[in-house]
Image 1 (cartoon, helix red, strand yellow):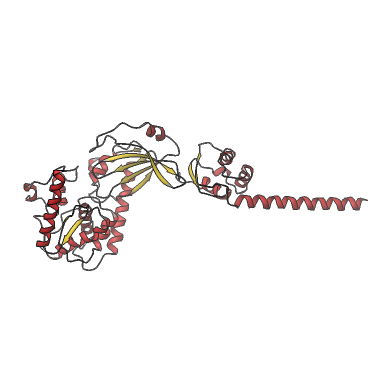
Image 2 (tube, helix red, strand yellow; image 1 turned 30 degrees about the vertical axis):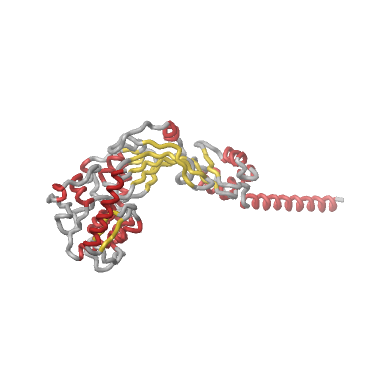
Length: 391
């Protein structure tokens, strides 16, 4: 009798163990399997949240098949205590394992609201935008112009005030190619989510700040941001100089930076940069003066603001070191902060016979080898200008 009882008990124990093992295997399969999400979502995890609260959010969003398995998986992988606050992009069909990794790995929020402080050549604006998790493209929800030099300030929208202190709001400083150091520094003075200040004596040299998009956090120090920009530009110049073409009429990385800044100010058309570079390289090789208006403008303004009018004959005939109609070779320094593409064009120009170019009315330029052809292109451009003026 006791033998039968022991045998039955052993059988029941084996069955129970098999069932437990099967349940564990099933739960693990559910934990790692594709999830039920049919499109990406933005999951917001509030400060102080727990895995239990997050699991209920996910269940409500139909992002997981079982909140209990999600919690058990987080506990089993020892990630319960690693939950981060923020807004996280959860892709379509993400498994519970993948979601736990997303909300515990740390770093900046990957979706939600973003404030972009955009520093342009002539004006600065603040853009509030939100990421559409499905298309993964940003949609503008608010915009205003802060009270900085060159701007007509507009009222701060309520949406900006709402997101300004939210824990999942991301912040970005975007600097356009062709801006001057003065323009960048003056604009940064109006950023209300940065700390610190830049003294006049601490102004970086012209051309040394890399135009780019920089993610920052609330209360980041402006000096640290300037240091990032400087480091990025220094590295870019070094990298392109190491890959320069042979037989260039420039002999130092600084001269490449100067030439790149002129190219940047002469054209905003990407596929023209190397052609424009070829014109200046050909002129330098032939001992011709560069004769480029942007350098003269910089000599007048010193990079502080926009000239806002045409150049006067007295300015075109001045003895300014930046007047390339008078002085030979490159000006003494950069006239703006060039982007990477212009730096690359300066050290690897197209091989062309061109020594002239003028605007063609499309936003680009007409290039020429001979003065006669150039004069014909100039006449066409003046006709276009006259037609526009008469309209």
